[in-house]
Length: 229
Image (cartoon, rainbow, N blue to C red):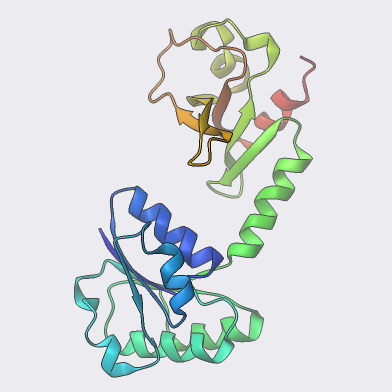
């Protein structure tokens, strides 16, 4: 897919790099040459330009883009101007970052397709992770169902997925296993990274240090996390 991301700060730059790593074509835009320089080797195309300039924006492949994300996070005025400008170009899918409640009201009036709240979403996920024992990360699927990453309880280490009886006992599915690998970075310093096992089967064995990716009702997840190991 093809994405255009306007604003290459912490959020926009990370989003652009992640989408590129997933194999998508990403055009990242920022008025700051320093921000463009910081991500140019991590994304498909990084362009230093003023996205409030309609003439410059018209040269972008907007009609071919599957989505345009306005990721500007500080300049209230610039975000509104850029959002309004791209709205005029009949973008397939226009997504804008909310800076505050007033800003959100304005971009809603402009008619964006989606509004994102990266800081609020991150805080919400962290709060859920902190309040549930052993949870590393979580994702809301709906009001009642969650996907969570949790350290494999000791009682499951050495067992196969079938032997845990987690589905029968708690109505929870193990979607996959995540293993932590140590790899040196370009400076030779070792850091841990996640490696997803892939689709698990009933015979997949859980090992010490594994992370389980679980899906289920939030009440069932809380119940299993509350058990003594």
